Amino acid sequence: MEFFSSLLSPIESILSFVLQALYGLTSAVGLETYGAAIILLTILIKMLLYPLTVKQVRSMKAMQEISPKMKKIQEKYKKDPQVMQQKIAALYQETGVNPLAGCLPLIIQMPILMGMYYALYNFDYPTPQAASFLWLPTMSEPDPLYVLPVLSALTTFLQQKQTTTEMNQQMKIMMFVMPLFIGWLSLNFPAGLVLYWVTMNVVQIGQQWWMYRGEDTKKEED
Image (cartoon, rainbow, N blue to C red; front, side, top):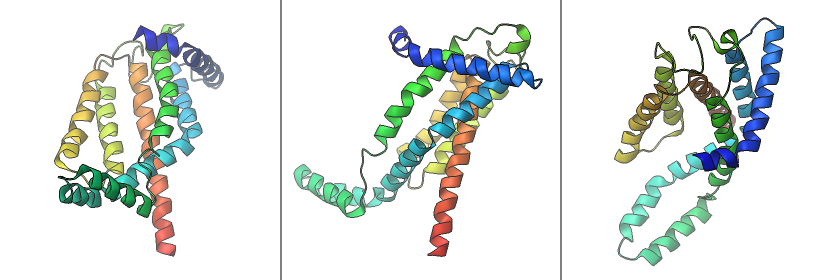
């Protein structure tokens, strides 16, 4: 963990600086809490990364749509791996799907998202008032009412469900296991970090809704 922390230190410093600047803005309008600044910074990051999110989500969706055809090819040519790979490659070419298209956007986003993780995990709030937010006495400690851990699990589930169409048994299990795992981790994480995760999920859900809404509108027009 120390290796990643040192590697992402420049990004962490930039995000911490922006967070403090946003806190200055929210304080000027009477919101003297870093909770509002965390929410604003998370929304800002998601807005800046939106083009990459579009590419990533559409790639995932396209892979799910051709998944049934891939399963048929794998079953039909399971004794001949070479032919199987040729048929799958032909399927990709025919449908215009690039299996690696969703990886690059994710790789680009990860340093920023991880930098945000370290910035908030190690963040030193200047005053007790600045560290408090709504029902939270301090965002440097876990949520005493467990509201944020529940929201982290719920929003993770909704975000996954929104992007998943065709599911095998393993994917169905993961759809429930992953949110529960995130919720369990959130029980011991600083509330400020969990607030960031929940906000990120909510914005992601909104962005994905907007993407799919646009696609549905185009289909109706066609």
